[in-house]
Length: 220
Image (cartoon, rainbow, N blue to C red; front, side, top):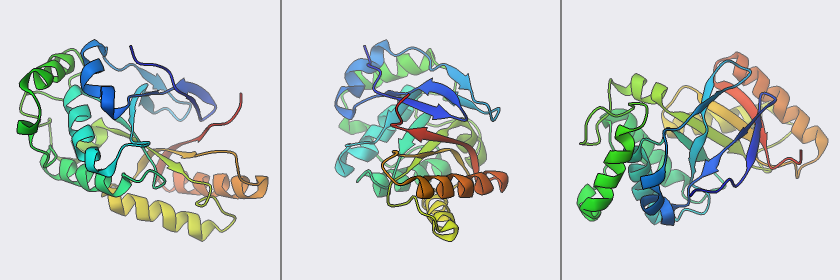
């Protein structure tokens, strides 16, 4: 019942991402199957089902993240171009620290939460209980999740230091030491900027700040 809305090349391996709009998440999650993984050429596994915060209103973002986590979604699509980024980053910091966000479940109908719990029980066990808490501590919670960040056209530049500052800023805002996947958000920049950005991302990958590199919205 969820539609394929795009594709991504990650390490030259084509992998489709299913993006779940906020307004249909609670309605459609009942039919969501456990998220399959695809192994990228870097050796890392990427969950194919992703929640994207594209066009998610900031005031709905914490709720959307909490419901997605409760449903067992492990892959999240982030970009500072998305107006909800600051709210999502703050909620993820709460999740790393406490195993849950500050959004209160009393605001949702009980049948919706039960539906999410039923879905999660069929998933791969990121959660172990129905109270929204996850296994292990902060490092395990981060390891269980896959974060994709998309560099906007403005963030793509021939200045390596600018790109490094951007990535370090994102890592700091998310309170993590690495990003699972960083993509060039679109090809609508000149070739010199795209190439310079890609080369700098390769250096950041070698330093361990990025696990995989890809592109978005490129014609195939």
